Image (cartoon, rainbow, N blue to C red; front, side, top):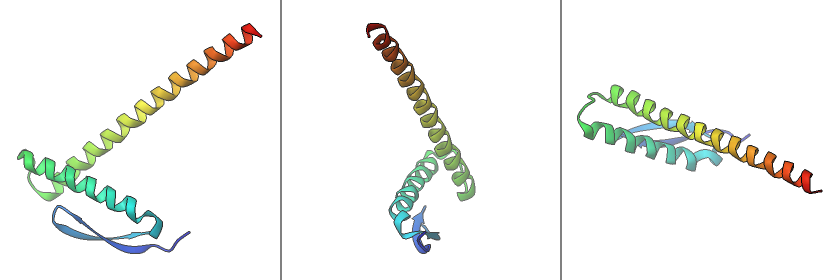
Length: 95
């Protein structure tokens, strides 16, 4: 396992130092950029004030998005398994 290094990321015009393994730095930068964009979107809406509240709303929105993707992925996996079962049944009947 690689030794974590300190990486600087900027979120909502503020710098944060984060410990991160060298092989994960690109993904961490992408995550920070996505969080920054979501926080800016929420701040621009004018409905939420304060960095902490904006951060919580961004976290909730991003978590919801991940959960929706997980649900969709699970649904796709179930559908593919059902199709695979039907194909196997048809192949067994024709053999």
